[in-house]
Image (cartoon, rainbow, N blue to C red; front, side):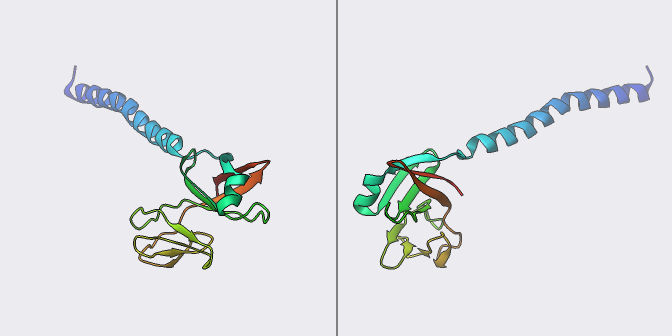
Length: 142
């Protein structure tokens, strides 16, 4: 075998053995990102009775993640956000008198659509669509 043929075979062998690794790496990245994502369908986070009792429902471990739903079932205009402050991870609280979410740790303020109104937080709160189905309060990622 000539030297050039040998080098070609070694190069082809290296390419053939590297290809499955490259495909697996690409596949596992896309699989991981889709499996780590939250469910896209409506998920129950509480009941209408729970919501009407205090005006809010806080669930830290729902199928879609942490959820804070505020409102009254009679108005049907529910607001739902991930209550985890993006600044340092504290749980924001709903201040109905201000119509804002406020972080108790560093006083960041967020509007009803999760937008930052006062720092130090720079990122908005993640929001959810929310509705009432029968006697259940359900949410799904926006």
